[in-house]
Length: 202
Image 1 (cartoon, rainbow, N blue to C red):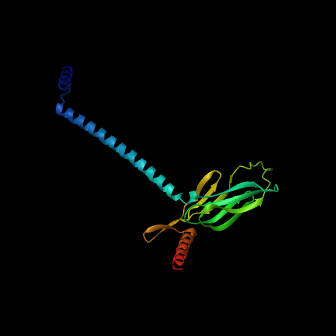
Image 2: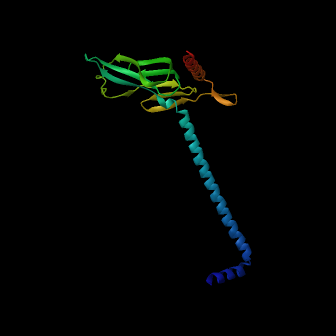
Image 3: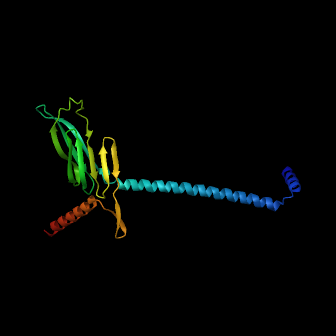
């Protein structure tokens, strides 16, 4: 009853019709609903963009994440101390233009084919006890390499880092890498397919 009286007094004092007040109220709630919808859509868009970027990051790292090199200290039966350096490429494609740095220095090689099992790159005499190296410690070597898409990477004790994205060009309606690694990977695929075909016909 009080609200009705207040409403009547307000209308009488202001000369505003009840229908006009109702229109304002409806417009206010409509604006509030539209604002909420816009905010929700924005948040959804941001979340989807983040998920898409995460998927892209995962895809570009897919091969590189399967490539690593490390060194292991050893002691021969005669007491000689050595360090052996291994590399693994657990992906299905080769990597290229590798630069591997361990305690013995740096050397370069052109290609590393898939190696499901760790491959011994070199074993060298090294007095690791003088350097305070724990004989049970596995030391990550520093490895720079280019993946099959032409992206340049470095893996070291701090993790895996993308140094340079592959430069892309449009070929046949799709983007492909222009780096030499892209061409080398295609050549390697053809060679494997040709070898498999020869094995079947033989």
